[in-house]
Image (cartoon, rainbow, N blue to C red; front, top):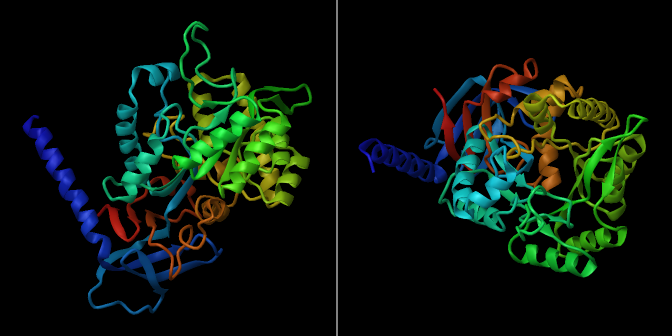
Length: 425
């Protein structure tokens, strides 16, 4: 190893040791503005006391323990750590999906994922729901384990391992039929195979079950989005019911109205992408308490790369549907599909898209990526807003995101679990 490489390794080791050492530290954070992620009120000049990994006090006159390290963010806006409810840590926006699966080993892709989760945390995302490992089997569980053990820095992870689909309905699909190559998901056919796969994934560490309900989609003459569903109603219901029996929630990839309808009828917990939502489906989802995770950034990035007329139509339809759903108060959680685009792109751009193109208020966009996403994960008692008793996942940005939502892409301070990961002076 070169001298430069050794120095970088030593510096990184010292930095990570500093993070670990700070885990039991007491901090007093002086917040110039506080957006707590739950209320609509912005509080001024608030003190947040953090002891160990929890927030123990909060208020304009909160007592500062004598042993506390003061963190002065009096010229910043302080918020809860961001939550991205739709990611793929085992990919990195590769152009050739098949090449990534067949030329890169799972160990290499896992190492790459370590860099990706570190980048996400650097950008202020202290929690991710990773919805399928894209052919990397159960490596997402290993990354989660390494983070939880303190071996690597990264967000809290909720993972769904391999994902479920049926033959002919997932990538890569442009290789010779003579080659018996694995796909990016676990392929199942029939109720028995579906039940076995759900049980296997739970046994190997899946927190969620991800099912691809439709694939592909097309624009109808009436301007709606239609598509083919991948499973029979009986197959889909069996997998969803089994996941729920095993106390796991189900995320459904569903872009078309056919897919969304099938997913809702089967009783899934969240709709991923959901471009084809119409009024009746929005109403049904709200009645059932189903969340929508719209993933705008991945479609915007794809359109920037290819300028596809189909993607342009898709985005126009989805933005209109999303604005309707927002006005009807459907539960909408921020998700980006990071990994389907490069992790070098800041996921916090999704907040801006919710505001500037979907019509959200800045405060509601922030809630989508904090308290609402935490509700989706079933973690509202620990993350998603700032209050005494909550885990100390805290970020800070310059300026006021209620006036300029893009400042959420300029995170300058990140604390996760009471440890300071980033503090730009």
